[in-house]
Length: 106
Image (cartoon, rainbow, N blue to C red):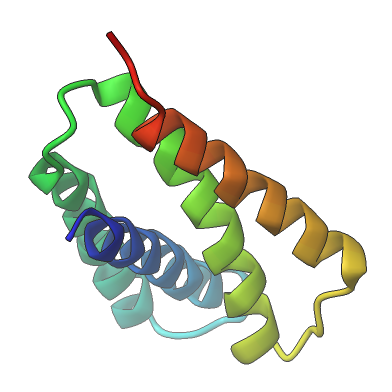
C-alpha cells in the first residue's frame, strides 16, 4: 500500500506541476493553472496517508520515487527517451528509497 501512495503522490505532483507549466509556459488557459494548483494541494495531502512515522523519512523516500516517475513522465508524455544515465540514476534512487524505508532499525 505504501508504494501505491508514493506513486499517487508523485503523479499528483508531476501532473499538477505539468498543468501549471502548460498554463504559464505554453499559453494554455487559466483553467490549466487552476486545475494544476488544486492537484498540487491534493499532492500535499496524499503523503499524510503513509504509515511511516517520520515526515522527513517519508519525504526523502518520496523524492526517489519522484525521480523515477519524472523520468517515466518525460518518456511517456514529453516523448523524451531516457538514456542509460537517466535509468541508472533512477535505479540508484530506488535503491536509496528501499534502504531508507525498509532497513532494519532498532
